[in-house]
Length: 145
Image (cartoon, rainbow, N blue to C red; front, side):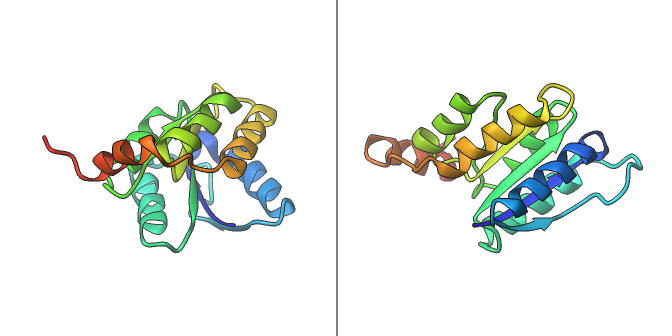
């Protein structure tokens, strides 16, 4: 699978560990940065990640910051994105099964590397159930506000 991963400076180490683990699992990974621990703004990297997944360059995305909250908000500004903030495998699996999430976000200050890998495994191996959930997913990209 083609997976894009991005973070801010607070999640740099977790990003590197997950990137390497994904490659070991046989995935093609695009690391969208950052490349140093210098302070950066998470929206810049969230927007970059969203663009790459939305245009089909990557099939799925992984967004990381200190809490996972800020970067998930920035990813979800793109109407093609359904980024779920997860902290354990069940929420990652349900994000795929019920919401057809194409990106997950995690907080490096809140989620350890083993749990993050378990979340990624659930996210990447769970299929979207479709059916009654499709109508709701369609509304996420086309809100009638």
